[in-house]
Structures are given as structure tokens and as C-alpha cells.
Length: 113
Length: 111
Image (cartoon, rainbow over all chains, first blue to last red; front, top):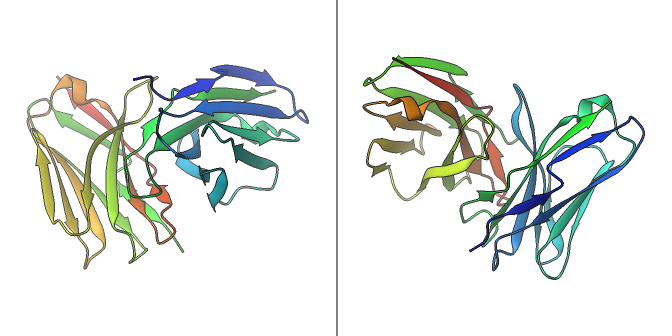
């Protein structure tokens, strides 16, 4: 079966712009989580969606937002981009909240210039 | 607060030797502890996980141990091979079912 698909793979934006990233989970997986990966900081939790509802949120500013659609696909949006937002954004899908294992997508590498 | 500490940040071992990575967590409600391996330029992949009702789990050359009283868990890789070179992340679920990751350990297998 198809894995977790993230689009686009690479993105270059300028400061102040906004960006939308997309994640399609494995068929049947209803939970989608988003992580920001930067060198030295590991994987930092952004948020988790389950059945179209945000169930958990990490310690990121309000510029970071997301949503999940009825088909479990998820999007995350970052507004007013800052240089420090440059990172690899990974989404992961799982069958249930916190009780299953994650399958990660390949990520979207965002560069803010 | 919720926190997962992982040590060491970098580890070099001779091929054939064992490698041990240790993690501690702060949330006493944590009950699920996965380990992920991320090779250079690739996505993290689950390699082994353990739940709080089990003290140890083994899968071929890798094993994970859990000490709930001390709130720490460890990954053990025996007979290391070149393909074990990667970044390894430990993680723990918290009381809100959020999965919190450690900062990772870069493992180098020396020839």
C-alpha cells in the first residue's frame, strides 16, 4: 500500500511570505502528526490531528497552524515566514493517537531566504 | 513538563562491538516507547518499540530495555555493522498521547 506522501519535497520562500504543506497519510490511518526537524534540535512536535480535530499542539507560535480533512489528508500552514523556520517538516501517520507506531513521510524541506 | 533526554549525542563504535543509547523521560504516565532510525537523507523509520507492561524486548541484533521506576529506557545494538550508521531517536508518549522525541544520537560504525 502507498506510504505517507508529502508535497512539495522542496520549497524556497522569502521572509514574510506564507506557505502550505500537504500530507496524505497511509490509507486507513486517521492520525496525522507534524514535526519540525532541525540540526541539533531533533524532532519537535508541532501538532496532531485525528478525525479532523486537533488533539495536541506543541510549543510553536500561532503562525503555525494546520487542519485535517475528512479523507484524513492534512495541511500545515506557516504565515509570516522567518529565517528560523527553515527546516525539514515531517508528517507521520498512525492508526490511533499515541498508541500506535508512526510511518513518516519523506518530508518537505523549507528554506526561507 | 514533558521531556525526553537522550545520550550520548554522538557515539562511535568499532564494527562488531555493541552500542548502547540511553533515554530518560519525565511524564510518569508515559506508556509507549518507540525507537526510530534515520539514515542520511531519509525519513525516520520505526525499528523497535516497547510498552510499559514489558521490561525488555528483542528483535535480532537490537533490544530495548525499560525501567519504569527510574523512568529510563535504552537501545542496545549488538554485533554492529556498517549499515547501522544512522541517527537514532528515542521517543515516549505523554499523558495526552503525544509522542515526544529525544534529540537523537548519531551512531558511527568504524571499520
